[in-house]
Amino acid sequence: MSKTTHMPRLDTILMVEKAIKEAKRYPSKNQLFRSLEKQVQYQTLNTILDYLESSNKITYDREGAIIWVFADNPKLKKLLVGSTRLR
Image (tube, rainbow, N blue to C red):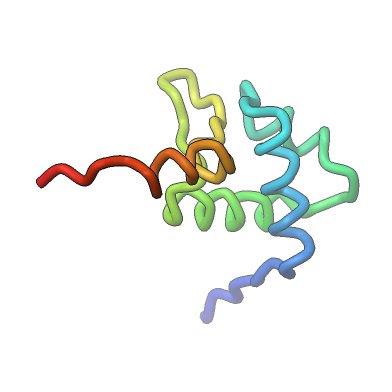
C-alpha cells in the first residue's frame, strides 16, 4: 500500500508562517490550529510545521510551545551587515 503525501499550497504555508510570526509564541499546535484564518487539515498543519522547523524558522520549547526564531528583523539584518566578522 502506498502512502499519499499531501503537499500544502504556498498560500497556506504563508498563512501559518504569518500567524506564528505575529504571535511570537503559541502554547500548542492545537491553539495555532484553532487560530488560523481558514481551515487547514491537521495533517497539513503538521507538514507545514515540519517544514518550518527544518528550515530553522520555528522551534519548540520544553513544553512543546511553538516559537518563531527566524532572524528576519530589519534592524538585525542591518546590524549583521555592519558588524565585524570574527574567525
